[in-house]
Image (cartoon, rainbow, N blue to C red):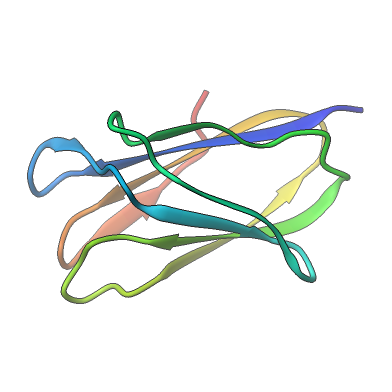
Length: 96
């Protein structure tokens, strides 16, 4: 069983990728953290994860959102979890 995770943050207010956004992956403790590149991506936030519930915590540049948390259950395969964010709104989904 191989589990890996990537992410992408898009600034929908400005219509461009959100670079320099810190993204943390937590289980009981911090597993890893990274910042999005110029294209708003972290191609491999984590690999070789164990199955279970994980929390992604995004810190976007927003006057309102100081942190956005998403809790997901990972089983087997690759997971891509994008975040679409503006100053006062956000959404996420399981990407491909």
